[in-house]
Length: 268
Image (tube, rainbow, N blue to C red):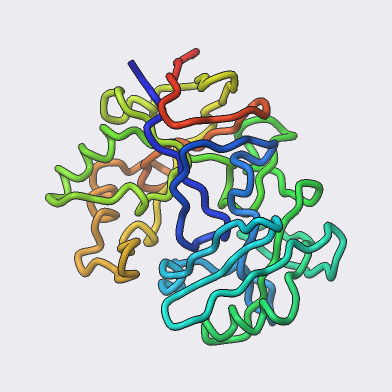
């Protein structure tokens, strides 16, 4: 039987992930997932581990007030309040998308600038300012927060085991930053799924996930692998026209709740 074996949320894009036992869903995927982002102060361009590997050591957790608590080695923790939907709007760019979103304020900016080592701002995207998903996939009204292209990423445990064997060493699931992990399937079975149901929520599988240099960063240490693994193996064994594929991007068709251990049903 297929079941949901793990849930991960990433409140701040490209920072450390949270391990969850249960979580609600809204129209942008897991509640609170990648709703915050760091941007270059001058350009508004988004920052990730691709260029700032130290972000793998940045912890960003939702706090009781609905805001964010930031912490990192050598830095005192800071609580950041959730800005209003129309507060101090800042123009930002993520890939080819430009949008205006609330800025988290000067105290947060000083903290993240000190951590990154250059002028940086912290921004947040409310539900009513979300982007549309990558054109050509899914429905025209599908939306996403600050994730690269789609609200959710799914990976099968057997797929990771197969890749680990091909690379020749164990690989951490968090290296690939999924939201949903499925056990009980064959390796890469998720490549053939089109629709699934977990609990009362149906999901559309809209696109394979093209992997990048971020997969070579150890999520525990922040160090890049000298042999470019596992990306090198993916480029040899999982290459398609759009890149080296691992995992599937999903869109949820309703709100609801997910809990680890729920059965997974393949609808199509």
